[in-house]
Amino acid sequence: MTGKQAYDVVIIGGGPAGLTAGIYTARARLRSLLIEKAAPGGWIVNAGVVENYPGFPQGISGMELADLMNEQAAKFGMETLTAEVTGLELKGEQKLVRTTEGDIVAKAVIIAGGSDRAKLGVPGEEEFMGRGVAFCAVCDAYFYRDLPVVVVGGGNAAINEALELSKFASKVTAIEGGDVVERLRLRNVLSGEKSTLDISGIFVATGTKPNTDYLKGVLPLDASGAITTNEKMETEVSGIFAAGDIRSNSIRQVAAAIGDGAVAAIYAEKFITS
Image 1 (cartoon, rainbow, N blue to C red):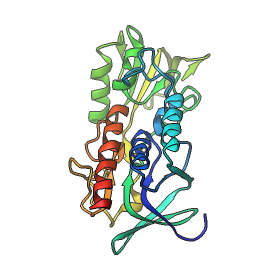
Image 2: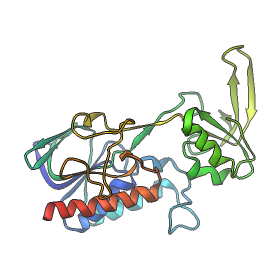
Image 3: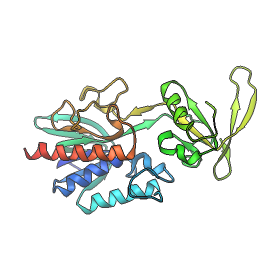
Image 4: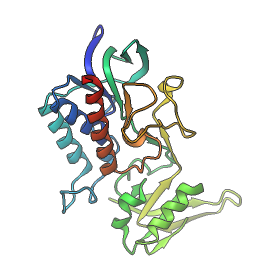
């Protein structure tokens, strides 16, 4: 993309919140562009099975759910740009979105870039993602009914994960396997002693980081770096909205992100047409 392209709405982030916003704005016949640096879907593409999203009693893979959302938004005319957003500036009543593929001008912006989950960086973590390695007890604890699991992390995040898992798992203790996680290799950092622990799942609870580095000085952020909004998903800057995991106090669930995306889109349309 070369030169400055103009849109009614630019949506930053292609997870459930962003895709839902695109469905609503495109269906409202607003010229809509969704910018996503990777494949549409966000974190749900790593989910082997999503069981807690309404309408799919047998569950659905995260990848398939993301593809269906993207297909639906595209059907109504939403355009997509594969690029990374590097800046957001206010130019009078317009918003200038700077990307690695050029600058884009919009009347309204919906920020739905989500958060990055902090990883352990240990062998097996990437290989077993979605096959025993998980990041959300509320999402995945049900799959570990009466099975031993481990929680890795500290602070309130790890405690909350452990409490949620204790409702389902046979044993909660705080990566090796064939097709799925089977055991955990441990090394005592004080004594150096090595051991193994047979488990069925490992939940990583080392925190999240909202993707808002490029927004510092542009929008008010909370202590964690998330964007503060009101119930209309409006930020303190007129015409800029936020939805999904990137929003302060998000519960980080697909259903909630979709609700946020719909609300943001509806009020973005009201902002543009008022």
